[in-house]
Length: 186
Image (cartoon, rainbow, N blue to C red; front, top):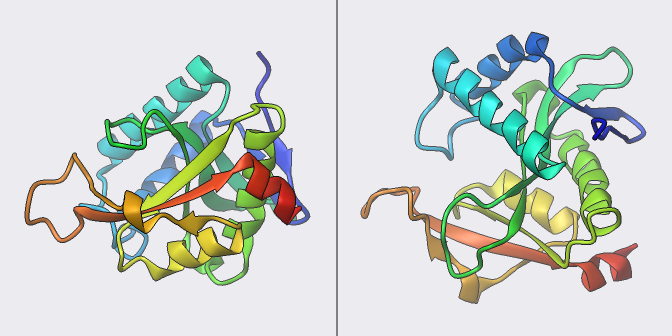
């Protein structure tokens, strides 16, 4: 299967290459980017995460794309789709997620790339639903979720099973977008 690439007016969502590893490591080591995650990642942890993302692409035909700016090829971040890799009341499910370099925040790039990923999810993949989730304090991600048409499912909120009891990042809000709702928004 050949790599899937998506283009938006400003962005190129593409397959990974080894040259992406330093920029991805920089993204994962940024304290502001990782504010709502348990910890920043070391280079080794970042490389291991990249290997898992690349394996997901190989095994499922979709995953987290590298996002670059079309004007200059600059690394913007990662965004894409992946199978939720833990058990919860809403799994099995496919989630949409993103991490962008702070210099690209506030420009609508996450929403732009997410719309392309959702079109891929609901058209060629024919998914019935896509989910997203984040901690209550992550207002930036919640704003992106709202802009791309996702709705919070307050009854679906959950405690992340990979975080210990009492961890302030354990409570998560669940967002959903079904194919019918996505088609109505188009």
